[in-house]
Length: 111
Image (cartoon, rainbow, N blue to C red; front, side):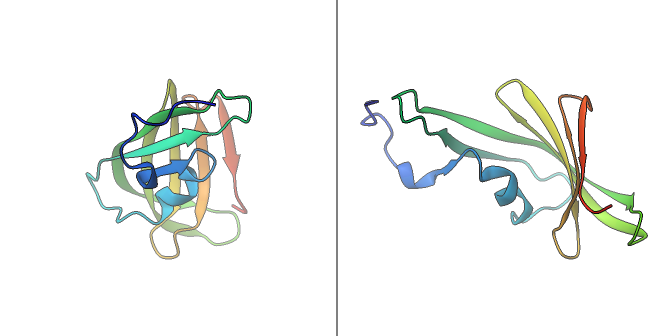
């Protein structure tokens, strides 16, 4: 088992699979920056700890297929060496789109 004694406050860490949902509920505004502490649990004792850095938040409009134009937060974050851009609705915090690895993989949600 990994020695966790060097981590003073484990309650400030989030599971790596949850951080993309946590980003939606942060107090986002233009220019917002933040570091989130995350852990990647591995039952084979390879649990790792790292940071997700929110580099930039901008305001944009996002054209959806069924809901028209929506005001969104365009949130750029980096985890390890991977950049992700989230398009999060400013009204209901719904994720409309995510771009991974500089747009090489794009996921649309009910656009």
